[in-house]
Length: 310
Image 1 (cartoon, rainbow, N blue to C red):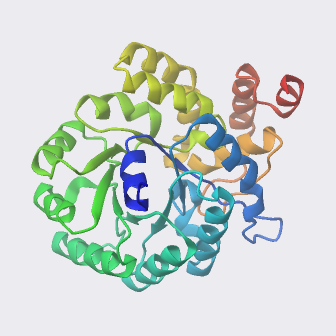
Image 2: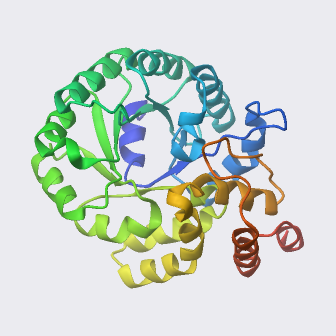
């Protein structure tokens, strides 16, 4: 029987779905809104689900709220796929959340890159070492959004016991290729900039990708992954082109609409997960909302269309 660690390693080359965090009208976390999102994603074939990622507004949550979310997600997933829990912020918060995530039943920890304005490359190594100790055997996935710490530091990070994978979220595929070359071959490298960057990252050695689209249209994400896994870049790029407007909208306002578009789409689908907390953009502008509704209609995802199709 495969161990929990083996399941994570087997799933990492797939799609890492980053779940939203639902809020109610009083701005409290409301995890129950995720149940249909989770069920839909697993049914479509998404390989891993992540609580407390950036699409989950990690930096807008208190540590207590992040703990509540990983407990709720693990319970709703119920072992059907591995659950990865995002941890980060101050070292004290990261350590506490690592321990709480392990207790909640998370399969692995995703370590957010520290956003501190005074980050030393060797300090990041110490940070991840402390989180690994707190995780007490849970596999770690490094989430690298800024490759400015340098390849030497990244090589040292990958050598920390327990580090199983890296989500590369910097738009630098050639540097990614060199990082892969330097690392232990067992390290799993995952494209961390969603579907649109998956082809170039896959071309240099990454496997799998993160996705916020899975909250809304997991079937499309799975189709893109299948095309890349088969080496069919033409089909993958065609499928990415279809959903390109969705990602273009998410990138507006300095990426401030990243989560806003996902949550607005869910509301249009009849699966309202509430608002986006500041400093994210909320609500969408009239232009953004109109374009989003048009695209969801074209894709057959609006609430009435889904009900008729069922």
